[in-house]
Image (cartoon, rainbow, N blue to C red; front, side, top):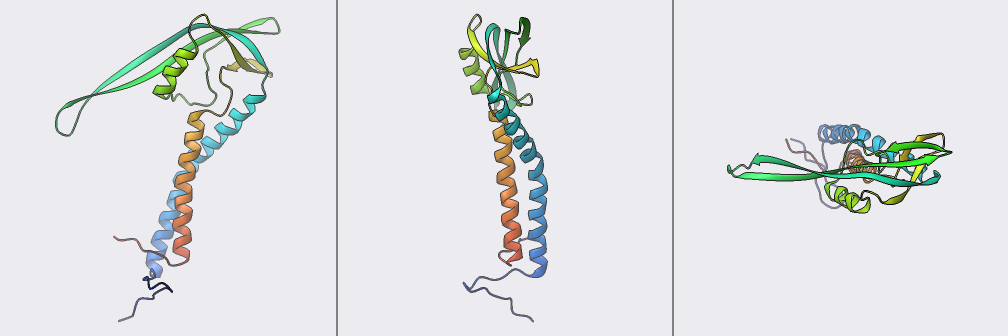
Length: 183
């Protein structure tokens, strides 16, 4: 019978097999982290580039807040209502004497809207308001009311970082023989 190795603090060191399992789980986390990290990084970089775009005056043509209700049953059988809000904004603007219409508020949100932010957008962009819009100088049909990295892009980047750093930490622990996975 072999005696398990112990580190300088008196903690049991993981066996080679346990280290391999932890290392493989760390690699799996790195693979899972890649998609949200790359998507978020791309959105943040491209969103930051919109900060340099020229601005023009835009008029809000319409601002429609939609409330989505979803009925579900809880584990105890009680009815629960989930509320989600989205906003649709349309605005017109002119660049070099040509008129354009857009509905984009933030760049790179990939169809995801935060309910609280949607309500703020409804208040911030009422019908008839005159606001500033940033437009792409190479393609003036592309414009945003809030040019910057979007909250959605930053969320994806953050999720990818947390998962990826967790994977790196597990990989680091396994290389040093720290910890073990219980099966």
